[in-house]
Image (cartoon, rainbow, N blue to C red; front, side, top):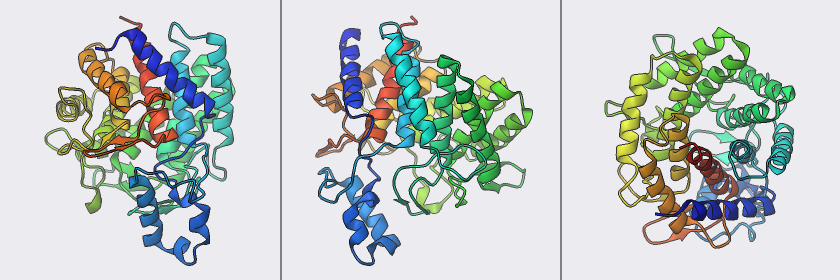
Length: 393
């Protein structure tokens, strides 16, 4: 097993790399930022061409972004993850507090500047056009996912810096969720939030992230309407939990897969609702889902399966979310043997000599492109939880 000093050295190499890059980089889904694509006749207006172009860049282990003139950029969700990670480090022994406070101040300011204007409250999107099978979203279209990660990070920063402006900025995101997102109702009056203001998809982890933020905002406002809304959204998703404890990605027929880190999102959100509300209604759903999650997605040597029925690709997102899920649920030490096994394998097999982590390991090759939001921000955030928990033995 890797020693604590080795793990800290690994994290510091990652931290130095991200700081040297100014938290700016490429993303698996940023292909449509290509200046080359934009000048090829007819392609920018074709849904098929946009989807194919994104998938080519996402799936290729060779980075063609310089050739296609895709510039590095700051992704709001990535900035939020770094911010939340630094807030964890501020509570961890062994890091220079003044330096960390300066980083938290800086990243908070950047995150607020990156917010998308024109909605009921602060909200955030991605720094690229995004075509999926379900919908097309122009650059910086606000999403429930990016917005909730940003608002939660600002609340983390508020709890460290005690600056009311950060709390107020996060609280306003609740208005975006309540007023600007679409809802799909079931016959009981429970509902799922849409991914953005412009679609009606029923993505479970996305809706649960919104419910989790509303329940956390209740902690600051005492507004019981926030808990009521959160409970209805969680109830909808729990009704769609499979008998074995798993969830499909969404209700859409082409979203019927079960994967690692989105399951972790679901569990984290359901548990956070309990922590903020003390409502035990969904505890059984959490326990059933956690058992499935731990028994399905991690093998004996520490590899993190992507899908419930397939090991590959081994994606850096998955080990990161494992640490977060168990840390937030207060189960870090109970499952530390598993966490250590996964973290040790991930560092040995997915970290470069330069400090950054690879995107994915596949059966016959490894995608080593150093994506900033998807890879570095997530493992930075995950390992910050590891370091925070490991000091509290």
